[in-house]
Length: 157
Image (cartoon, rainbow, N blue to C red; front, side, top):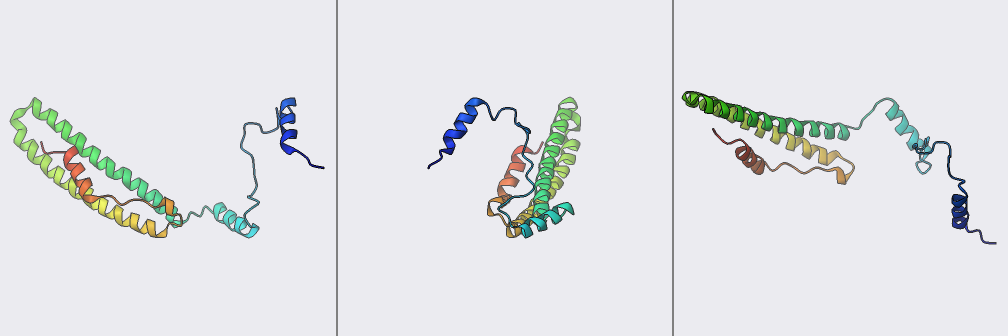
């Protein structure tokens, strides 16, 4: 005798047997994955309970943080340039002094930007070598393109 499970499920749905089940709309609480061996699950649980994070995940977080810091450096120097350009329009007599000061700041910012990108690329290379998941690997920053972007977004006064 053959049992048609799909037909039985459809009939139960039509009768409304699956409405108002406990936990409806909430994630299921599954104690553990039945397809993972108990020893592996227990090891992972012990690591999780002791707040252990694999090094490659920590490095990934550091990379994301450093990417944000590099973008902040660029946005800060752009904002500084905009403020100084407005100041020059108000007081043209101080153009040379303001320009000299800004060029010094801009040169230092470009050096810091380049250094941070080089350091970040080294970190990304180490991360790509240690991550167990190939799809999580990250692309290196193109230094020439980044420097060109810096000059484009933050030209001299």
